[in-house]
Length: 258
Ligand code: CO8
Image (tube, rainbow, N blue to C red; front, top):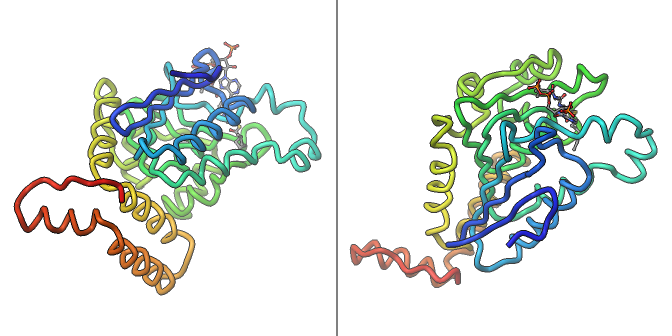
C-alpha cells in the first residue's frame, strides 16, 4: 500500500516497484518527490522481504529533471545552506540494487537519477540528456561524474555542453544503459530482471552491488582487495554452502538470506 503523494510503492515476491507519479509535469523532481523517494528507499533498505527494486515514471517521462519552477526563485544560500538536493544522496546510498525502467524522458536530474540506479533498462522510446546548460546551470545531482564515468569524456562533454538529447539507441551504443527493449515490453523485462536477482541470496546481492559500485571509486588494486574480502566474507553464510551444494547435487538452491 502506498502512503505517498508523489510516488507509488508496492512490493511482492521480494521485489519493490516505485513509480514517480507527477505525470502532468513529466515527473519533475521537486522537494517532495526527493523526500518521498529517500524515505521509501530507506524502508526498502531495511526491509528483509525486499531484495531488489524497480524505479520508473508514470506517463511519458521517467523524469524530465529537477522541478524548474520550484528551483527558479532559489538563491545560492537556499541551495547551499539548505542543501536543497542533499536527500538524493540517501537514495544513492540504498544498499540493495535498483533497476531504472526508463519509460520516456530522462533529462537533467532525471538522467542523473537513472544513473544513480544500478541497471538502466530503457524503452526504445526513451530519451536521455543533460540540458541544464540551456537553463544557465549545469548538472547538479552527480551527472558530470556519473555520466563521464559511464560514457567517457567525449560523449559526456558533448551532452553536458550542448544539452542535446540522445535516443535509446545512442544511449545503448555509448554504454549509458544496460538494455534497450520495445516500449511495450519495458516493465515485463525490468520485472523479469528483478525476479532473476530476487531469486538469489540477499547477502550476495548486496555484496555484488557494493563491490561493483566500489570499482568506480578506487584503484584496481584496492578494488580487487575489497572484492576479495567481501567474497571471503560470503563463506561465512549458509547460502554459500547451500548454493554450492545445490550445484554439486544438480538441484535448485534454497537460499535463506543467511
Ligand atoms: N520542471 C518543471 N516542470 C516541467 C519540467 C521540469 N523539469 N519538465 C516538464 N515540465 C512541465 C512543463 O512545464 C509542462 O507543464 P504545463 O503543462 O503546466 O505547461 C508539462 O511538464 C509538460 O511539458 P511540455 O509541455 O514542455 O512537454 P513537451 O512534450 O512539449 O516537452 C520536454 C517535453 C522536452 C521534456 C520539455 O518539457 C522540457 O524541455 N523539459 C525540461 C527539461 C529540462 O530542462 N530538465 C533539466 C532540469 S534542471 C535539472 O534537472 C537540474 C538537475 C540538477 C539539480 C538536482 C535536482 C534534483
